[in-house]
Image (cartoon, rainbow, N blue to C red; front, side):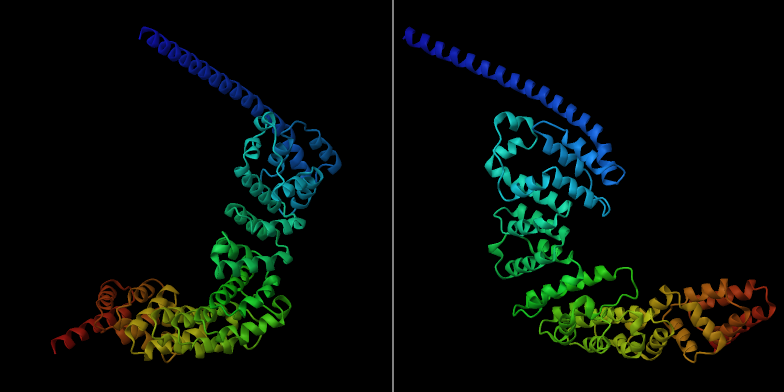
Length: 494
């Protein structure tokens, strides 16, 4: 028994010593690694400080290209590719800097390296090299190499390397979802026309068989929308696809492409040179009559920009669609100055059963100036829908139309102006009106208003008349206000 206990103690002691030595080794390695990394990052910072101005002058065209290239090639060491990436891709290049930056990446061999890595040809470095370079450890671990490949795809997209689009398209079918997503963004950045159809194929795959790809619908759609409008004809087959969702997505993608092109341009027009005859005909003859109401709704965002004279009749047809949201999109699409001649035909939308359509119709008619105002006032006076009247009254106030209505009332050049003001008073929408009368109105307008509305039962009008009777400097207006108050009192007594 003592012998057994002695052996156990000896074994425990040996294990303790081994564990202790192991801890010392780990601590030593950690200290050594820390020291090496400190020296490494000091070197990186030194080289960055030295070569960052070189790169800045090169891409700005203020330095001889060959001289700058030779200086960058002078960087040595196993981490020079990493350092070149850091120096050249430190920020997104402008359109002016991009060609020079792309040429630098090609001449330094970065493009070839990125292409090889994206294709899966990632060299497995030695332990020493792995420790020396930031991405070295990832390169040694097979399952993490997709991160290197994804970074390479991103870099090719940053410099918009057109010749790399076939590799990026191939990466759309890679087993790793992150790489697929990065590749789709890179394709969107490069915008090579031949890659557009590959993205359309991915769109179909996502809709018809989502299990066959890890790409999200959002990623594919975002990439397609990024392409110039001239590529939109590549969606013709999708617009005619038997699957209603594919037709909807294709229509919506074209709508977003058009919206991006037209942003900020009030007079933007689409013609056959941009979209092509076949696509224009599809937009006018097929999409507005698609069985899917979502397709009909989204098509309005394209049709309204077409220079074809059929665009207005088609939109007016959609304004009578059975689906309320199609009518909503149609009335919003008509909110362009070129559709001003259709103001009378838009007027009936003010009585639409759906309040959103009525509200959009009010907003659309606002931009048509006097023609739109005529439709609004006619509807406001004649409709029996109180809610619709409230909407129009709010627009009159928000759009600053009350001063114009008062001016027309005073000049007697609008037979409906008195009726509009009377309707506003009946609804209690008088605060803005009275503010105009108090601050900016001509004496003749205030006299006419006192004659027409001085005895109106609206509390705000009564208070205003009382204020005029008490403080007005114009004696005639003050006496008119007092007469209105007296007349109201007599009417009340009766």
